[in-house]
Picture 1: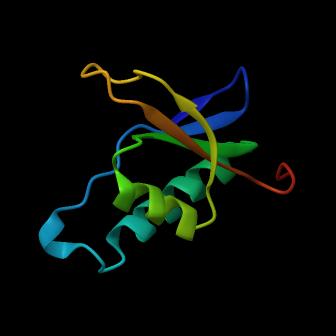
Picture 2: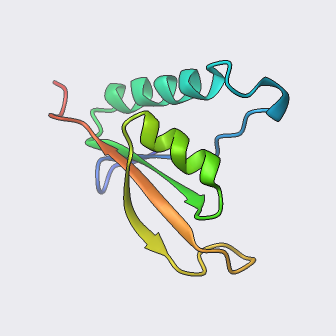
Length: 94
């Protein structure tokens, strides 16, 4: 996680779970901790980038309430397109 004061958003830098333990709630728990961190910083929301070919990751983010914000053509080194998923909180916490 990284917090950006200039836009009051947090970014999940990397989220990876060993394929042998997929579907055990680990990724959901990690994102939940990330969201807790964002709330502690009084962030407006969180975003995460993932390759558009990462259909499992994209479905995961959508299932936990993140929405596709935009597609970034040739975002990654290997010229893969990236998608930014975002979740904004209803109100800034006080």
